[in-house]
Each structure stands twice: as structure tokens, then as C-alpha cells.
Length: 88
Ligand SMILES: [Zn+2]
Image 1 (cartoon, rainbow, N blue to C red):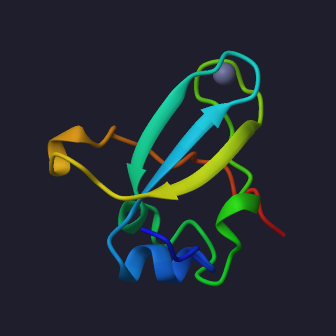
Image 2 (image 1 turned 30 degrees about the horizontal axis):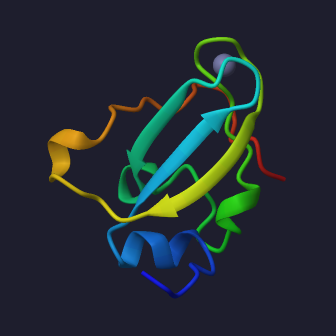
């Protein structure tokens, strides 16, 4: 995949996953972008979405889109936080 993803909506449209790595404990999760619909602003810049680690509470160090390999079962489950979304 050579083309960069412009925003979250494009990641959903292309059925991509998002790989999120914690900046403190290095916990890594892989989440289907579409499972975050309704929580992430559609036009959000993927790299700037402020995810927070479920394990230690630190901010994510990196957020990147990637292709999904191996089907749905390779995706981590994800529960959006109960608090308001961390953007704006
Ligand atoms: Zn962490």
C-alpha cells in the first residue's frame, strides 16, 4: 500500500486497521477503523487521534493505518472509553 491515508474516513472506506502503540508501556493494539466510527471524528488526521492506553493511561506514541491481514480474527477487540472523545 503506497498511498498515504489522508484521514479517518478514508481508513474506514478502505477497510483498514489502525495500529496503536502506547508511549509508556509499549502495549500495542490493532483495531479495525470501522469499529471506531462514531467515536473518531470522520475527518480526523489519523496520526493525531489522541488514543489513551487502557493499561497504563499514557498517550499513544504512534497511530498508523495498516492493511488487515488474516481476517477479522486478527483484530484486537476494542471498547471505546466512556469518557468524551479526546479530540477537540
Ligand atoms: Zn500503556
